[in-house]
Image (cartoon, rainbow, N blue to C red; front, side):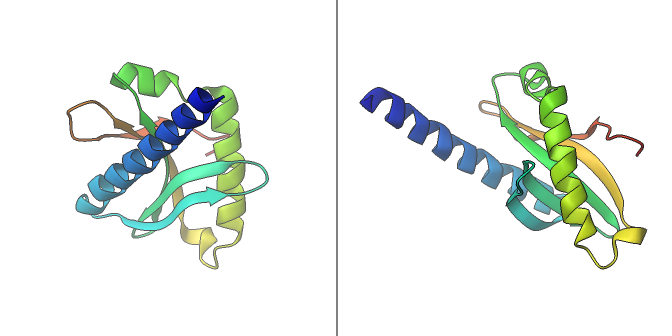
Length: 125
């Protein structure tokens, strides 16, 4: 039991560190982080970043390769992220003029985070 809780703690810390690195990388690219770990009853968004009227809904994955990070965001995860994004967008007063994009930031070993724009496409977007 102790092994399970310590590995869970390590995974949690790794996730926080990965999200911090991803936020730093996006900030240096000119994005403003408007939310971290945005939770709803339908799903969670790791980062919500904005640059002008563009809103990037960002999933952060720490994996050994870019391909592994891309594969880690399956159809079910995509639907949960979209549902959470719909809730977040509905609460924005300027939502009508916003364009939304679903991105991925892959945090790879010994490399700067890789930002993949349009990692997946939402329904009807």
